[in-house]
Length: 116
Length: 112
Image (tube, rainbow over the protein chains, first blue to last red):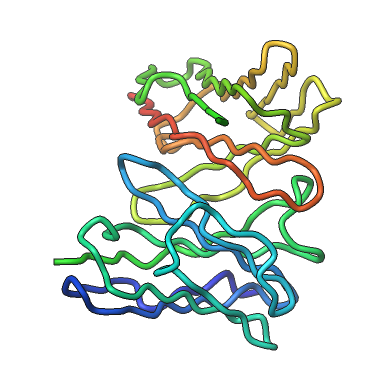
């Protein structure tokens, strides 16, 4: 089975622009969650989607949004980029009923976003 | 607010020794605790999970303990190898679809 695929791998944007990141989960996985990873803050939860519905949301401003399609693929959008949005954005998929502690997260290798 | 701490930021050990990584938490009652390995430029990879009512889990050279009274998990790698060098993250999650909360990670270097 193919793993979680994230595109693009690298992205450079200018402050004020917007960006869309894409994530294709493992086949059969219906839950997709997004995380931001920075050296200072570590891995922080952005949101989780299950069956096209947002089930859970982290403590990020409304500039961060996402959606999930019927084939479970997910996109994350960040509008009005700020320098502090520079980070590695990771997507993870999990089996069955969404994020649960008894089920591991399967991460992609992330999109490295640099805002200049 | 919830807080998770892991060891020191970095840990160096000699090849063949046992590496012990610590995950401490406060203001949280996780139902599960998971450990992940992350290599530079890659996403985290799941290693082991342990439930709140389990004391210990093993998988090959890996062992995890979970003490809910001390609010601590220990992650051991026995007979460590240079290939074990990576950052190790602990993640806590409660019940009923709560999101995962990750620790800051410990960067382990196994020296030949």
